[in-house]
Amino acid sequence: MIKKMPVKPILHNIRILDFTWALAGPYATRLLGDYGAEVIKVQPLISSEADDALARGYYHTWNRNKLGITLNMDKPEGVTLAKRLAATCDAVVENFTPRVMANWGLDYKNLKKVKPDVIMVSMSVMGQKRPHRDYAGFGPTVHALSGMTQLTSFPGKLPIGPGFSYADHAVGLYASIALLGALEKRGKTGEGQHIDISEVEAMTSLLKGAESVPMGNESLVAAPHDVYRCQGENHWCAITVFTEEEWRGLKKALENPAWAEDEKFATLSTRLDHKEELDRLISGWTCKYTAVEVMARLQRNGVAAGVVQDAADIVKDPQLRARGFLIEDKGIPFVDATPIKLSKSAAEYNRGAPAPGQDNDYVYGKLLGMSRGEMAELKAKRVI
Image 1 (cartoon, rainbow, N blue to C red):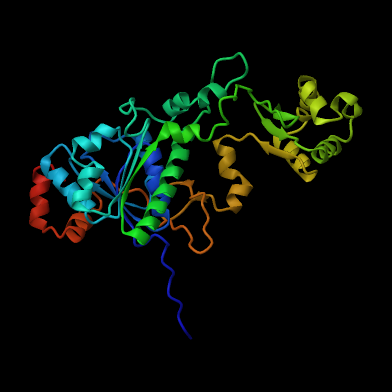
Image 2 (tube, rainbow, N blue to C red):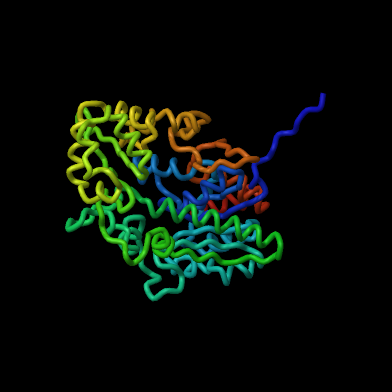
């Protein structure tokens, strides 16, 4: 009997030096780590007094499947070590403002001197070369500067924002895909490159265009199209009807009420013209049932409908469970799995986020060939 050899994850031969923080950068490198890339996360020397439970939970969410080293970049020896590490890596990823890596002498121009074919990914609010390049920010800042925040409001009302850092997730995906493209190009040409991602530009590319205006929950191509109150306290269901077939399905789910045959609801155009009345009538039906009952009945009749979920609902969601979306074992906190499914290589979740300096011995000892004496000296100097 021939024993099948285990299939290595698709990125098992890729090493990344990770200078990222917050969400967008760590998410990009987490996606690659899930598929086998050896991600070396650089962390500052932090005292135990600086530990924080909330920050620790956030850190664990975005930094699984990574190695962790400590490195004091305020010391010349720290910068020298960073360059030595970069020389062993396929890519360097960072999401500081542009001045940070340059001040350390770790910008693309200098990294090329230690590794000519290195790939560098830089994520910043405005990009590396624009007049406002030194703007600092995070997801909500990017939402505002891109115009997304303005769109998340009802006509004539103040913007409310999307409620979570959508831009950070989007930019993390952009960065990981761009890095994969650069690796493919280097495999063909032998050339590295600098990927300069402006988070505002990435977010703007996902918006409709100059004609977009705040519309609340309204739509120009669907009616009904809103969230409707259901039985219980603050329970809602989102309902959308695009086609006449879906409209017939909605009427069937509601047991063909007489009002649904009124000419004012006969076509999409007339339903849009009488949206407020239509919403009131549908709400009169949804409030009699739980959100799950509303969703199930509508879906059985071919209508797009979904419960508005809080975090507890998401954890119990049967669809997410069926897709294996939540990780519950292997020492990794209860967090989301990768959303990306590849046909020939499964994501692996082998380890939780590293403690500070957890992998110093492997990285400095094995990868850089430093002796225990050399590492002890650097530790005494507060470099590692």
